[in-house]
Length: 489
Image (tube, rainbow, N blue to C red; front, side, top):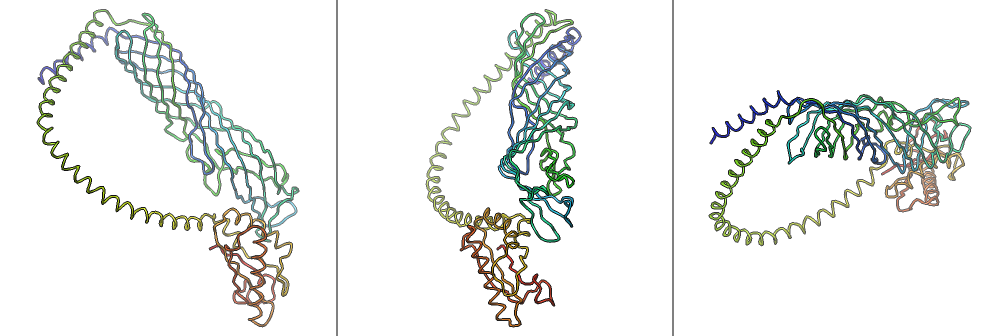
């Protein structure tokens, strides 16, 4: 039996070698396709969407045997990507605005931000193609690599609103509604520009049917997949929003693909990806398979198929006999297993009931932990920054203190389940007991102010630290020491 198999494969090899000497041919083609074609990446904000795009190309295939060929050519591929972000908060260190002093932070808040990116690549495929006869046509499959050269890259972005707020590290003061310094609310923001992409390396697969239209003309119909193997995005080291201190009202805008936040790129690696359908018209030149070679190939196919069918029949008969003997044993085993399964179901239901109770308890714990840890480090730092400037024995908030509370209130309203503690500090009297009373009064007055702004009273706890925790030791009457401080729990 082994000898027959060896002879069969030997005959197949000899026929292929003979045909390889007789059937060298060339094929030129034009192709078109359509499908999902996208720049794939994962952003730190929002979600991405792919779109349908077209592609075109020309090709050349060298067939060194009736079944095998090498394909190359030029393809023009288009790629799109779209990102949507409902809300995006950014923080950048910016140049000092003219007329002000010390280091400044820019807090920028986008709402309903959308960005579209487009790219086109000229691709050079190098693929190995195999085809096998199916009656008078062929089934084909091709695999290899494509090398993509970027021809163009553009983006356009828009946002419903953009709110910018400045913060001075020196004074601890926020600057907003000040258009002169570029700190304002802007609506219907639009921007566009160019994108630079590196060379792309793609894994290429294609398969389908090759329909014979005439002696040398064929029509290919099939599906294709191109998957990028490398990051084609250039250096992402820009700010999405660039502050111009000499002209604060005129912000500069960049693409998310070009930008970073907190020293980290706003997207991970960008790879081109496409999948879809493709048609190709091929025109062959050169020698074709001779009639004798065709007959040998057909005969070999018939012999091989007959041998495979006979072996399959023998195997099937043998399996039927063995299966009949095993059927009785399996029937008994099945009855026993069913009885055990019924017993196991009862136990499983008990275990599942216990797990369900534990799971619900775990969900409550996880929800509580999640609610406590959703603030970013920057938000927590700003909220817990002391609010000073009280006059002697003053408990009411002045205008400057209310301005400092704007951002804190906005953040606390965005996280309605996070509890806070308001600490009151007083250094107004030589009596510690009076200072404790005054610290409690300041904390209670701040709680009343926050409740009036819409923050639930049950979230807020007030305590007095009296004169026990000075920020500026040795200066009891310093307005810096007369303060309140919000502590996030």
